[in-house]
Image 1 (cartoon, rainbow, N blue to C red):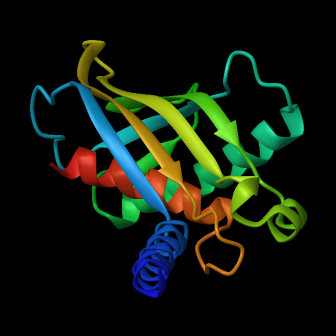
Image 2 (cartoon, helix red, strand yellow):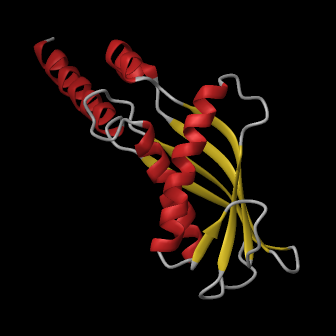
Image 3 (tube, one colour):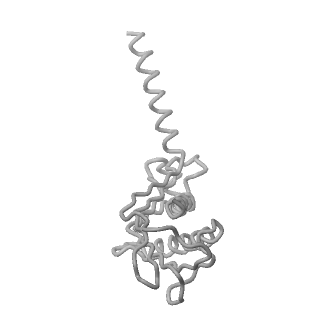
Length: 176
C-alpha cells in the first residue's frame, strides 16, 4: 500500500507541475486559409482595418482590445519592415489588411486573483485578409489566435500578452 501511494503521489505531483507550466505561458496560433499568392512588395503601404466581432456583448472591452491591437499592429508592421507606412481606412495605399475579430476574452486581474487559473485566459481570435488594393485581389488570408497565460503568478497573464502573441503570429505569417 505504501508503494502504491508513493507512486501515485509522484504521478500527481508531476501532473500538477505540468498543469502549472502549461498555464504559465502565452501562445499564438495561425491557420492559413489562403496561401500567399506572392511576396509583399518592398517599400509599400497598407491600410489597416480592425473590425469588431459581430455579436460583442461588452462594447467597452472590445473597444479596449481594438485600441491596444491597433497600437501594436501599426508599430510592428513598420518596424518589422513589412510596410513603409500604415494608414487608417479611407486613405490610399498599396495594400489593405482587414482584421475581422471573431471573439475576444478579457480577464480582469481581480478575477485572476480570486479564481486563479480557473478565470481563464485573455484571448483574441480573428480572420486576417491582405488584399492588393489596386486590383482588389486577395494576397493571403489566415485565422489567428493569441492567448495569455492563465496562471495568476505568470508574467504573461495580461491582455497585452495575448495581443503580443496575436501580432507575432500575423507578422510571422506575412514574413513567410
